[in-house]
Image 1 (cartoon, rainbow, N blue to C red):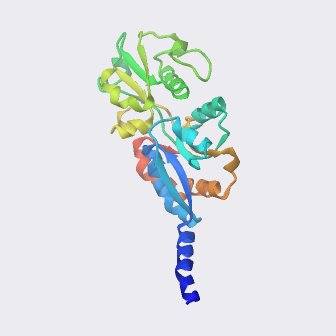
Image 2: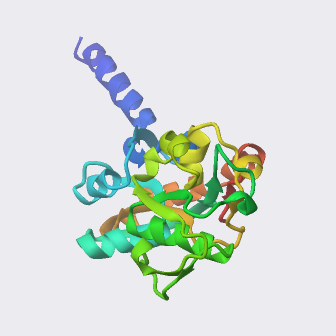
Image 3: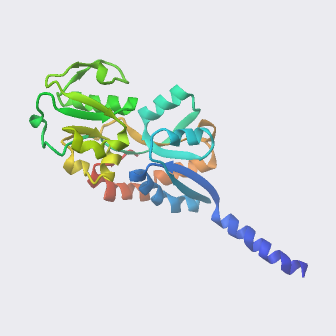
Length: 257
């Protein structure tokens, strides 16, 4: 009877072992969640159950990792990570480059830069790294000139021939307010959520040599852990590369590995 009583316990233990250790990764919806869905079964092969938790902002995913609420996140590019990690002393490290989301200029009202008129309104992201990135894109296309420096803002514009009026808006809100401005510089993930296809709809867009690779980040103490190594293998796997090539490249998103 005692031996029979052990059978359910053994079965329960084996089922738990097969399920693997939960590894929670915080993501923004597109394309980060989609990529992690591809990585999920690959993580299972290494004995980890990848749990995907969605966030809708650019601050909480890093705080959640630093405060040990989640193991890792996947939503941000390297300059944004470096800035927030340094300023807030979060003690984090990025462990894998996955893809690049080229930033583009979009409009519901014009179809080319030549249609921009004196005094037109252009919106840009209001977080430090993405605002600087947006302004550099506009500068590269001859619309403005900006002071040297990494974290420039609209207050650092030194030449504005068309007297463009700039509005700083939360990055996720830019597509929703596109009808209220002449044009807007939008991150590819948020453009995609709004049904915009960068390769078709962007008036101008960053090139494939952009330094803004999106990365997976963890606490620095965890970067060499088995879970982190498995996450790197899964996120830079041939399966993820194929998914990006087939599903995201047509939308303007390119692999970074």
